[in-house]
Length: 95
Image (tube, rainbow, N blue to C red; front, side):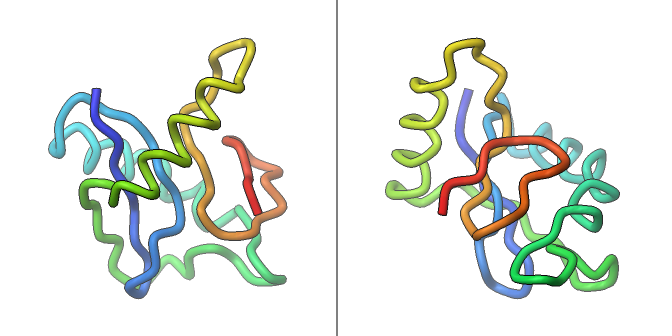
């Protein structure tokens, strides 16, 4: 498994693991509604219009994801928000 990041408007907003880049793109397509429902700094994380870009995580993003996954006792970490969020939908928010 590799760690990927979804970018919105040039900013990495969430890291997650997936087996391939194609799988990562499918995953992001599947979580579009959740990205619109999540709130960051008082606004939806994604406006539903801006392009979503999926890329390999940078080393520091991958390290943050690995720390969060290692600290997750029930091993449910799948998404790590890289920006402040209310994390009311899913994933782990680290500010």
